[in-house]
Image (cartoon, rainbow, N blue to C red; front, side):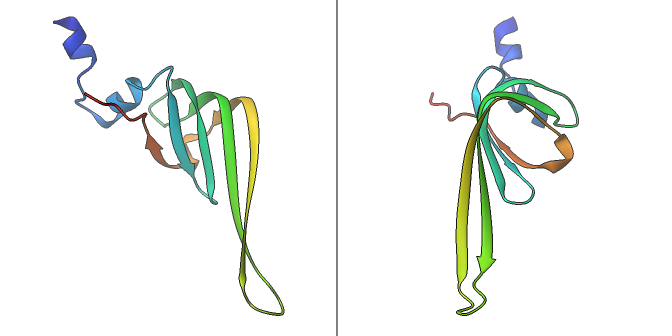
Length: 97
């Protein structure tokens, strides 16, 4: 019976708690996206992620043609502290019943 209560989602942060030690997707301000293993978090959504892949998307306007140039930059980081005030979205791993 206790395991059912531990896996129940009653509050929004319960979904984050159930994603500990699993790979999650985090969207941040300024067009940054992270995918990594969630090691820890707090009520402010400060997070510690491991084995992180960061994708930064930048859009520039060509001065001559006025076309948008979209560039993506990727990097991997072993451990990353994410400050919660920059977090826009957190997506837990897809669970199938």
